[in-house]
Image 1 (cartoon, rainbow, N blue to C red):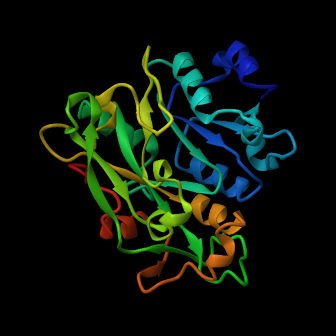
Image 2 (tube, rainbow, N blue to C red):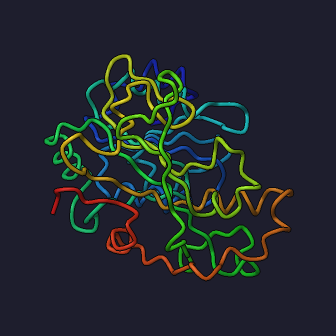
Length: 289
């Protein structure tokens, strides 16, 4: 099913959407659209809503399993407006959002569906889940000049850290159970990244509810949604492995010539398996085994 824009989707999309979890995929360019969609369908999302420019085509094997919304980020369409629109349409349902060339991994995702994971998370009285955007990059930029290769993908195995998230409304005291996370290419090449975009944390998995709003810094206006754990124990977290930053750094004329390679002594091949991310401490199983 196809919609001519966000307004059309708002008017006609609700009857076409099943119960969640629902993935919202935002297509910025033509890189790895097909693998992004297949990955999230394989994870068990019950519907994919793909926001993409009219010039791009959906792969035939996934076209009948997705809802397509004409949407062009280069012309000013807003990811945050779109997510907030779906929040209003789907109160009570679990939603997820990401971009093309990004892939969600959660603990034990090779053998358990996204619905199973979110059912457990809900039983722990959690309505949102912290995710980390972990940068991927090709090892050889001569062979892969746009830094994207699933077969030769690498990630940083160290260099991640967290800082207290200060509350400007409370004399800059640290917010309870909230941290700002940094690392990856956004840390190593921070001179090319605007300060507001250097964080790697997002609340990409969440339950919609009336009045909830996603802010432009990937946090919500309900502060409990922005916490990494409940007050009693650690909770599940997930990772979104992403080529977005590597693509941007190589496409930007101001940075591309400063980066002959992304590899350094802490680079390691990405194994496309949740166990590697757990072993590196890039996501947390909480009490789920």
